[in-house]
Image (cartoon, rainbow, N blue to C red; front, side):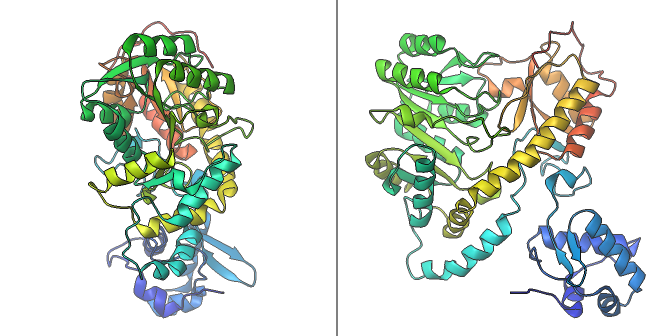
Length: 473
């Protein structure tokens, strides 16, 4: 169905400041704001330039300039004979002038967060979910284990990845972080040991601490996991729970091999350890040959619990994640989460269920956008900060950068003074370790990453460089 907006309708929606100059730029920004806020849907045909000029009481030249600006930045697509339609730009086309980019809390370029923007598929999925939403309004709206269509979609995806799964084995959560917190509440004992990787996801470390459990870090080496060290830590600590990120590990980007996955599960079986496998980045491969079976595919006795998320592949604003476990464990966890939030939002779950239908399109989109950003970040680092060492991962969303000294906090402080917020290595460790590292995400557009690195590299007086290390590119 052809969707369009008349000139009077669009004129009523745009809000141009009376003193805004030049007018064409303010008009373009107003239309862009409507698109990004979702108040003007993607794919809607806008009125002809002369009609909008009449409705606004400005010259046609002014509207033409505004449309040209929107077109040049990717917010309009025009075809001969079919007019101009609203669009969302390729993330790589965005720059530091994007008002939705800066961190909400301090206005800095947010290189502390490895969160990509929403997929271009989101708008259609929202519209599809909206058409089905009313059917669910006839019930209570509470689905403690999650909406059936979404549980079916998640289970089906595990099957496609080589791990047969029933919908009853899926619990939908409010994101992966909620899932990890729920699992720590269910399985971690106050005062008891919980094995975690070092470095690891900071909020998982927080969840262990919040439970009152004792952290047992085991190092992830520059070449990945050393399973003898992991097995030794299990035996020596007597841990009964471990949190691991085998898929494009956050923050190092390592992908655990199938052989190491098998060895990890075997070690957990020998030592009586339950493994929480965070798969939040599992679908984000920059190289489509970078594949591994889910960790639970090597499990024979139900000791691997998998955590997934819609945040990295589709959008963090959806706040949808899931747990894959035995049906009995899912029932137990559903009862436990009822004391906190009863159930997740229906609409967001419907949206994610629709997005699962086009998962390969989303994976290709991320591979294209993040691949370009990763290449840009690596290139500008080599140009501006050649003493900083890193390896380019085959997936995930960040580079784990080794600095030329234990100066991560000082570098982060100096960068903040130049308008860039960074994530220093100690955030990802236990007890103040990892001071030689930064996590630099490549989930922002190339222009933003290049600008951020150049700001960081500019006259680095807030830390003292040491002798450069041999790069492990």
